[in-house]
Length: 124
Figure 1 (cartoon, one colour):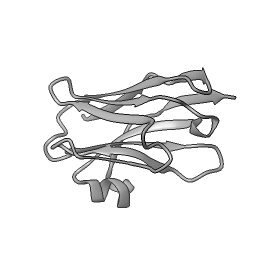
Figure 2: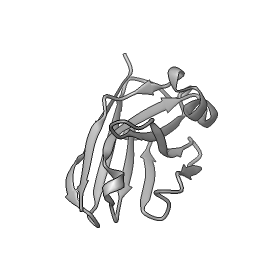
Figure 3: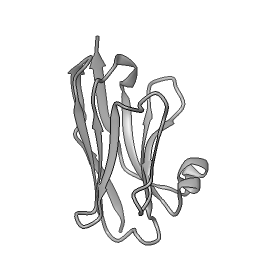
């Protein structure tokens, strides 16, 4: 059974850093070769934060460009999100997800494999 398990969340002050990790258990790629991080704050819609394909191509939400970095280690079956210069608006539950393509990752979240989430809280 495929599982995605996130860790690394916590509480930090504005300007601080956190590194999220998503460990994959079970075989998902191929075909689930596109991985991404999403977040959802209370009362808000879930939004894509960053995504990375099997060839290393990345995309970022405008709100996190130049502050967050997504990487993957296929040998370790892990996905990472380095978050620097955190802001109170970054506070949310963060989820990792796997999909067959970036298009599906973003447009068909019902077909993604999801982790259980990890909480990030940034205080001002």
